[in-house]
Every structure is written in structure tokens, then in C-alpha cells.
Length: 324
Image 1 (tube, rainbow, N blue to C red):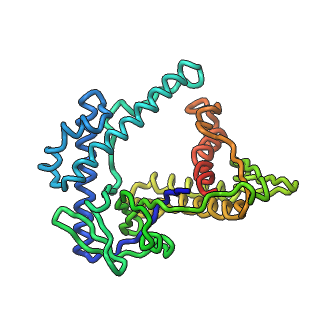
Image 2 (image 1 turned 90 degrees about the vertical axis):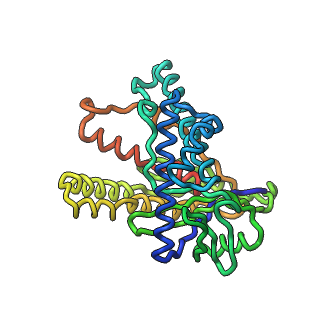
């Protein structure tokens, strides 16, 4: 059985290497924004091949990106616009069916790219070296960088896992660059005769998960801690945004991602308690659950309703599903 996992490696960069990586990620981001404006001007073009013919040489000249990266940019922009068109069509169908009155506004302006990420192709833009080192392409040539990460992921690479594309990812709060690598590994096929237990999982907001097993036992995982933490961070962010000083903005940067990491940690702990060897797990389908439930927004919504809307928007059921 094939399984695709994403390995996360921390890049140990010298000041010179960090500046080189910073330059290539910023150039890649600016190239994405440029290609997005061209796609928007050409009837919101979502075909990556056609977009590449329009912007390839401009990207090479204006942003000095290597050839493979200059091909990746229009493909990524095309995929983004394709997603926006899909959401637009789904919104039109929902309006037609009377499920919503809100108009999708994702195509009213060019898609913006602000994150400092960069897509790399294996053997073209990056390759592995000995002694836990990786070779990365930059605007000024190749650099060889040491990396660290989960030992199991490193062993999979050494054992011949199929390596796919990668992304350079920047964390602003810690000012650290990471390399996210796609790995395809072989796992033994599941034998249905080894399944000893069946359990169903119901996820929610008050209780993040409720597990019911065939032996009539059940488990309840409360979401009170996450709701309390989310409300506290909301008040802190609101207060800092209202001040608007430079120190307040620095504090907002430091707080960014902290709530998300706490939620991910809680979901990970719950998934570890739910999953057991030789068990079959059933999960409910919550696709488009936010669109399928009615809520009041704007002036019609009370303070209590706005708080409920905020908690619903932060409900990370999909992440918990993926962890399980």
C-alpha cells in the first residue's frame, strides 16, 4: 500500500545562505503576484500551460528565477484560479438552490500571494547530499545546507522512499526556514481478518470527538480548553489591533500561529487516544458543513451569535479527521 507523507526539515542556514534563500523566496512570491495579475487581465485564466506562454520570459527577465521555477509559477497561479472558479460555481449553485444569499468575491480582484514560500522540483531545484545535507537552488547558484528533522523521515529517505516536490517555508515568529518534502512510502496492506474492533467517531465543537466502540464503551473529548484559549487570543488580538503601535504589531507577530499550534497539539493527542492497532474507524462526512448550517451575520447577529460564528469558523474538524 502506497502512502504519501510530508516530511518537515529545519534548515541550518548561515547568514549568507539565509540571505540567498530570502532573496529567492521573495522573488518567487513577486513572480506569483505578477503572473496572477496577468491571469486576471486575461479573463481570469486558469490554464497553467497557456499562462506559462504569456509570462515565462517575463519572469525570467524581471525576477531572475531559474527555468524550472519559472515554469512552476504559472502552474501554481493557474491552480489557484482553478480553485477560485470551482468555488464560484459552487456558490452560484448554492444561490440557485436557496442555500445562501452571499456572493463569492474571490474573483473580483487578482489573487494575492504574500507568504514567503517557494516550490522546488526534485533533482532540478534541490537534491540530497551526504551527512544530512541538501543542495538548494538560489538566484546566485546552488548552496549546500545542513538540515535536521524527524529521524524516521530521514531514515525513509535513506531507505529509498520516492521523493517528490518540496517547498521552502518561512516561519516569521521564529525567523526560521523549513523544507517540506513529499515522500511516498510502501506500507503493508491491511488484512481485514486482523480487524478486532470497530469504532465510530462523532466530532463536534462542545466535544471535539466522541468515540463509540462495539464493546459498548465510549470516550468523550471536551473542547472547552480550545474554546477558552480561542476566546482569550481573540481578546488579546482585538486589544493589540486597537492600539496599532509598533510594539503591538510585534506582539501580534509573536502571537501568530500560537493558537493554531495549540489546536493542532490537542487534535494530535485526541487522535492518538482514538487510534488503536487492528481497529476499523468510521468518520462522519462533514464536507461543506459551514455552508449547510444557517447562521446570522452582520447587524442581525447578536454578540452571542457572533461569538458562536467565530468558534464555528475556528472549528478544526478536518484537521482532526486527517490526524485520525
